[in-house]
Each structure stands twice: as C-alpha cells, then as structure tokens.
Image (cartoon, rainbow, N blue to C red; front, side):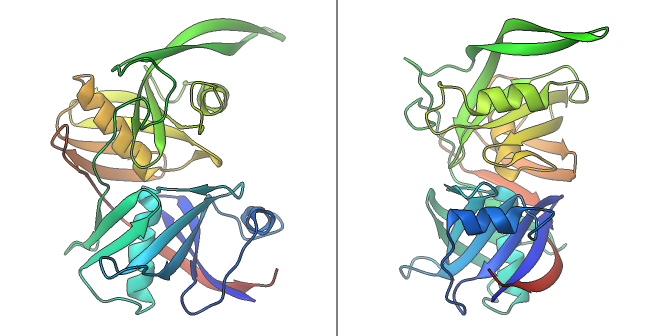
Length: 287
C-alpha cells in the first residue's frame, strides 16, 4: 500500500508521494495505472519526495508524466512539492533547496502564502534545448498539417508555423496566437510535441499577448496533453516573449486554471515564478 497526497497548482494536478518514509519502487506501467482518471487516482504528473543525495540540498525531487516517462522539470509541481514537505512536517525552512535532474531548484514561502520558485537560468542554444537546428534563432519554423472543417467534411492544409524555443530544464516551444480560445492547441500541440525537430519531444505553448505585462497561455504538455496550467511553460513563454521584444521583465501569465507571476531580468539570469499550491486530500492505493 502506498500513501499519497493529491494536490494541484492552478488545476495542474499531481499525486505527491513521500519516498523517504516509504519504500517506493514504481514501474512505468504502475504509474500509467495510477494516472488513469477512471481506474486509478488521476493526475498530470506524479512527484516523488526523496532524501537528499548531498549536503547542498534538502531533498531530491523526481517527476513522472502520466504516460510513465520521467522528466526533469515541473514548475507547478515544485510549488506543490514545497507545500507538501511543509504540511507533512518534513521541513520547516522558509527556503528549501531540492535536487532535480536539471539542477537545483530553490523554493521560497512568501508572507501571503504564495510560493516562489527560482526556476534557474534558461538555456537557448539548440543543443541545450534540444532542437535540431543549425544555429540559435528567436524564431524557428516547421511545416504543420492543419485540419479545417468545411460544412460536412474536413480538409487538411500544410502551413509553416513559427515558434520560439528554450529549455527551462525541459524543452519548450512557444508560438504567438491571436486568440487562445480558437488556437489549434490539441492538433498542433500533439504534432509539434512529437515533431522530429525535437529529439526529446517538447512542451508546446500557445501565447496571446494582451500587453507587455500580461499574456494568456495554453500549454500542451509533453507526455500529458493539454493541462490547466504549466509552470515551466509560463516561464518559457515569458522568456521567449522577452527575447522577441514582446514583453517586459514582470509578466502576469493567465492560464486556464489561474494566474502566475513571472519575473526574468534577461540573459544569464534565473527566472522566478510565484503562485499557489493546494492540497486536496490524502489517500492510499494498493498496486
């Protein structure tokens, strides 16, 4: 039997497991079963809280997608991680350092109950994202197939889509759209996530710029599909928007599940994300 806590960050939902006080070993098949919203628990990602591997950090943070694949970064999950270790009395520090597969994250509790995550320094070089491109660019492009409804049938059109790309510890592509309500998030998102230009697949953001300090965003997450919120996706959208001279350094990112505050001072500087984290319930499951 495994004890867990169901949590969410702006509707991006997680199962968080204490792997310090429980002996946890999960296969990809077991994770996929747990993620099933009909037969399992249901979640976008599963988070494991593990003991620190060295004295530079307080914990190790591991993230698994609903499809069972392990990934290196999840911003909304990081805030839930911080709330979990505080609520479960595993740590009472105001600043928590956690080791991830993409480096060290610093999680801070704010006076208003919000949690700020130092998401680290974005990576822009194609090999670091990774994206198959000869040189770094603010705009990459690939051919995409779009499905359009015409009366009682559908037609397919090939068009070139431009996007920015960056790594926030995980690969992101972000394209600007006129209106996120009518953006082809599911069809374009699925195609671009698995496009051969991304050897490790990618998270796909659809960004509508309201003004320099406010955007609306939908994200098709790698291994999970569209989610109500994506913390690293919000950071990536702001970074790319600033790189493309669309945004200021402080931006309110409005996602379907709620809003995040993102700050980035520019190249060579870390991205800071501030937002809530909520516990829903505790439970147990036998696999």
